Image (cartoon, rainbow, N blue to C red; front, side):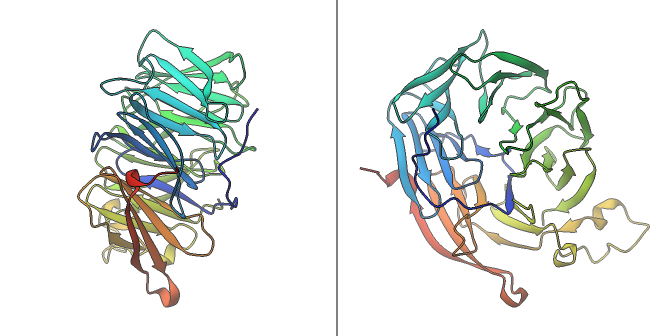
Amino acid sequence: MCVYFYASKIFKTHDFNFHKESSEIIKMANDGIMFIGFNQDSECFMCGLEDGYRIYNTDPLKENAREDEGGVKHVEMLYRCNYVGIVGGGKNPKYPRNKAIVWDDYQKKVAISLEFKIEVFSIKLRRDRIAVVFEKFIKVYSFSQTPQFMHVFDTYPNANGLCCLCSHSTNSYLAYPSDKKPGWVEIVDLFNTEKPSVKIEAHDNPITCMAMSNDGTKMATASTKGTLIRVFETEGGTLLHELRRGANTTKLCVSSDHGTVHVFILDSPEKNSRSSLANATFLPKYFQSKWSSFKFEVNNHSKFICAFSQNLDQHSIIALCSDGTYYKYLLDNANDTKSCQLESCTKFLELTSR
């Protein structure tokens, strides 16, 4: 049974989000925080702590659920479903590090427990599949009362647990750092694993970030070098955009390790600024890539992730920092001013649902 009990209006997303620190997450031990990540449509976010986990509504900000015992290094939601994927970690793990847990937050009990011989780094959920991420491979199981092992895929050494599992009903893509070569991404269709995987030579350096659009049609990547973001078509691996930082998927929201948020308009290339030397044919591709449509600074020295708010009454971006701070910025795109204004700043760990 899958109960959607974190009530709110459900909106169709038109964007996808991308974070410099990792694909969807912060893994940073600040104030007991080990993990912060958004759910599939960014309507909620999760926080893994040395003493449990929290689940919040993103906009408006509200605590929805919490568990206050044991360390959690990774939390995964399935939209607003009662099932929560958990991997234990920290000084006193909530569950052994070699287990992947699916917790039923409605019945307050473990629904699924998968035990392995080695450490689990992350877990991904969709309505019919569970992906368990290890350092050098990913195992896929059916999402059922008695999960059945289905596939295993080798990866490049992946201590950050990078993996994208499309949750859309029409696509079932799984993307991960390919074991073929550093900087490559491999995409498999879990509905049709006999079909050859799509191998993308995304970067020259190892992949450090990856994000998939909500409908599974586009894939964004960045490497350890971190200067270029590339957007590919998942079906065939065609390069669609090459972006330089300085769910129709029309906008890309990027957080950098320099405290800035960059927004790219993917369906209107003319709105993205370009280097003044972009038309000089003798210069390398560095000067020909698109630069961000606009950017702004987050006044916080911590690592952070960001996402477009799904509140259709406002155009805003939410930034979540590893020190437990929540920022909401209102965007003013009228007359192409491309500016933003800080609306709220909150310490989200101080909130309570009680």
